[in-house]
Length: 196
Length: 189
Image 1 (tube, each protein chain N blue to C red):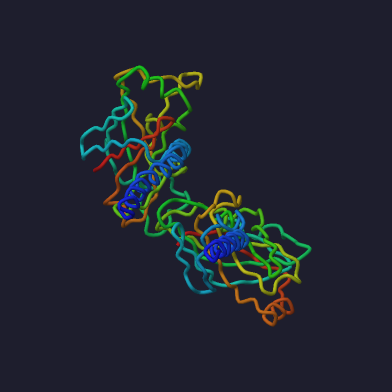
Image 2 (tube, rainbow over the protein chains, first blue to last red):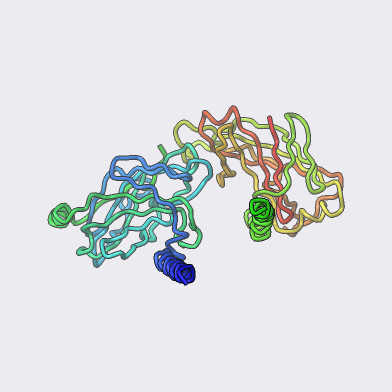
């Protein structure tokens, strides 16, 4: 009798453990998510496929790129704000692009880099040949505080399953974000990506 | 007696587990190789020698340093050099001859690799190497720009230019990944 009870109890415990593990198991998106290396402004992040160092961050109401002759192009406006992240990046072993550059805001929304030419996410990065340029994001002004930079090689998440990623803390505290918005310049002139 | 019985179970597990894993993984490995062109068979040519794979005989004809040909062209990135790589390929079988007319050059991918394992693909710039009548990849076009097979025994010479860091230049070797029958040819220098 005692043995039967013990067996029953063990079975119940095992079932509960299985249910617990099943519940605690992350969903498929999280299980196969890119493997991110954390970083912050000024510190180089070394993933298996690329190196990335965010040098500084700015915000602006409009941006314009200079052309090959250093003449400013047309102003690009936004209903929110432009977040300009200046970074240096290089591939480690094979050529790639950082098309999956996203600004992830505090509420979990992810803003893909703006589809403009001459930004770092559109550049072909080659091993041993670092490139410096801007990553450009268009976001609502009230979502600036707490935003982080997440970078993967592809814009389609399914192509980066368990792949390399960088997750950069931009240091955008509430106070700092408010100050950036208070002192926001009307326009920023950006240079195209250059190799270093 | 019990431990002996358990031993048999253990041994059976040791055999069955790798078989089960293999049965799941191997079909995916084949798909991965077909999709990426990585893996498959390999052929390596020692310096000055040929390598044969899938009925194709490959040879590295030479690696020279190129320079920007036009006076006002975009400058090269700092601390880089141009490697002009000339490779030749000769079909040895009828199937290999037809392979050239299959996919407009997408059936082979050229790259150079340095001693550290860093890999560069050909530059799109046309002003880095002298103009020649060499092909740019594994295909030959007729007068109407249609793909045509390379006759058995005839050599197709291919030229590509690569922009690589200066420190990589001395140790570059050439790598050609082949499709649809996946394979890699490595040409040493």
